[in-house]
Length: 492
Image 1 (spheres, helix red, strand yellow):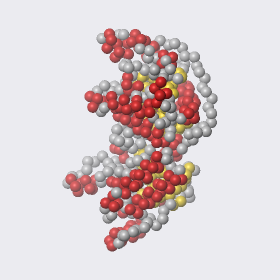
Image 2 (cartoon, rainbow, N blue to C red; image 1 turned 45 degrees about the horizontal axis):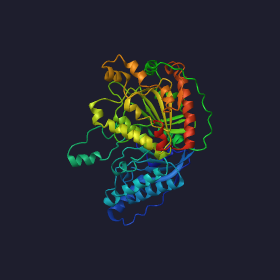
Image 3 (tube, rainbow, N blue to C red; image 1 turned 180 degrees about the horizontal axis):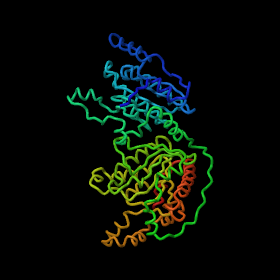
Image 4 (cartoon, rainbow, N blue to C red; image 1 turned 90 degrees about the vertical axis):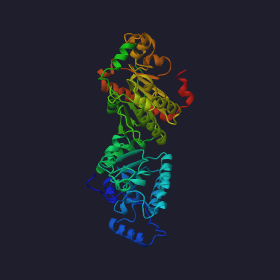
């Protein structure tokens, strides 16, 4: 567990720019409260130095104006009653009306038991206010502190576009003390921790409080980047693409030293904020999901990660569900979506079948074709099977010179047609898998040259791809989302 619990004002002082805090709070109404509970509230104010379990206001983070919601645990364990809920909803609505991003830092045992069901149902109002804030296209960032449980975790603690948590924080729905009282045994250790939530793809990172300002600044640099009026970018030169033999291209795409999405982001992106998992209990190392900028153009980035895909753990249905989280983020935040194809193929296993792999491929295809955000696909390397196709539909498709797309690995096609693996090169040639052939059919819009091979010039190649992404994303931001008809027409 975290060794030091910061008060709400200590966290504000740590994260916000010096002397930039302005409170939004009016005194709580305390309507209809008397007796022992009223005395508890007085003692809570004296103990905590604040008048409720939540304080709201605004300040600057690295010079950028941000609305802030912060819990205070020393006020009745951070519990949420009617007055705290009124304050939260008012703060969220004020940020929405002002067009401000919100940073929420909950810390709470949940609903205030002294108020019972009338307090419990406030989760609905709070969740509705957050949903309306996000529907306005405004960022909602969450920092889970120790502890965040119950109705707070199940409402404003779990709705972030980006969610990080304090190291060792107790984070979960049912408090362990309640579990033990109800079931007569302790809750299993290590489950309700920030680190375990990260492992299961529920939160995006585990960071100490002194790192919070930096991650908020980097995230907002992308999320608040202009969508219109981006300075024009010169069109990258169109290189002549030599007619390399199909099997040579396939072989080159499989080189272990070929640059993948991680090196692409390292050399080509301006800003990167990695995300993690579906937010719903699944993560797959075969997919890299991030917020990123190429030049001035922001995007949600979904890259099939060749380093994360192994023989023991090929890309599974979890990766596609994680990708669909990225698609939803792009729509909510009004950002372009970039997908990157680079996969040996989706998992062929009992677990993948029972995990709904085919259905996830279908849903990715349907979501991408209909997505209400500009879309760009980059074919970076291998493109095997439905797991690759699931990332293809886009308004603009770019391909590396030696990238390719095939219904099966050429060896698999050879096994079906010839009952051996020896005819793989022949099958690859006959199936028209190369980027250059897809370009001639109108499936690919632009090919990025490899000189002569991306693996031999990784940094230069990645920067060349980055320049193309910067140019094409700026074009897409100006044009807006394409139609279903236009996205489908390139496959006629």
